[in-house]
Length: 72
Image (cartoon, rainbow, N blue to C red; front, side, top):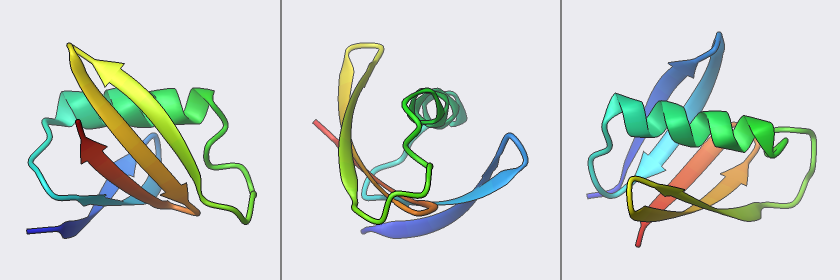
């Protein structure tokens, strides 16, 4: 079931939308990489990002503070 979970990371609130469970470590890693890629800068278009963490591949869509994560 797809869930929308509020998540506080580095004093900012994000809405995490994910169909599968993620560990806190995975989620913090993903958000840190997205911040490095300036994914949360004010761009009106949703962009896709591809991140790998411990041999798991994630496709991530960012729309404002909404972070949609698909595990591949």
